Length: 313
Image (cartoon, rainbow, N blue to C red; front, side, top):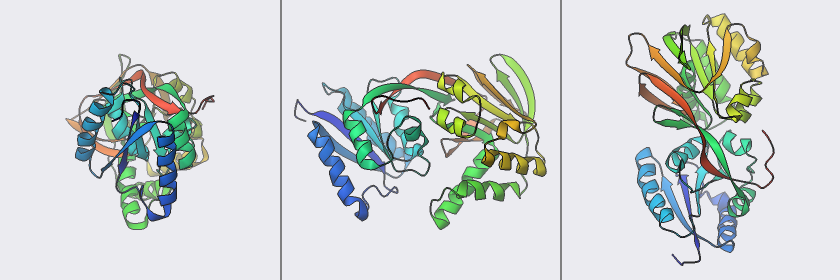
């Protein structure tokens, strides 16, 4: 790499359509923008997590050896951002976003344009903003982490996406599908900053994205913005109660629903009776995690490329 050029590495999911024929003109314009601003570009494709790991090892070595550490760009949805960000926390290498997802909560939260050409300009000319990153055991989440019903929603949503394509409506149809079926309650002990709370619950939800929480009209959005854990526990699990919960969620009135408790904390641990592991959803990806689940927030742990003059979410 020429000494005066800055490294720019683009990592994208091969399933995202980043190189789709109808986007070739956009792709070429983005590459021109990066070249004009003195970047030397390398593009990496992945389809599975092991390929992300392999690519990121090469990318980190490339950027750490450069005089100017450049930018690592995630082209995709929030799941792709999570996979790349996991390697960049606590480094000086900033993360750039080319938003190609369904919801793009991280991009929207920090005013990164959803139009790709404008997003490319932010990567090339924007400023670095340190943001908070939440952790569940060794997994990070930029948006949310959950257990109980929500992982079932994700699993069913992906089923609909495979058959019918990716549409936002599947977030709600998958929830309805799951609620019409049988599901087990979780018997947990939730330890919030050292205080123990036994709970029987169908759903525990933690949010790290202030915009997502704000769109749900949750007061804990401000807590997430300040770098605290922001959580919700649902204490009632009858079908009628959960349908009402879903209805209130769609209306943005979830905190008005009885038996929904929100809280903020610095540290949370979750234990379950007669279980050594639990199924969790982390930024839309499913994992099985060994108990106890330990949740914290690493404040200002990830450098993100954002437009100048960032407004509050």
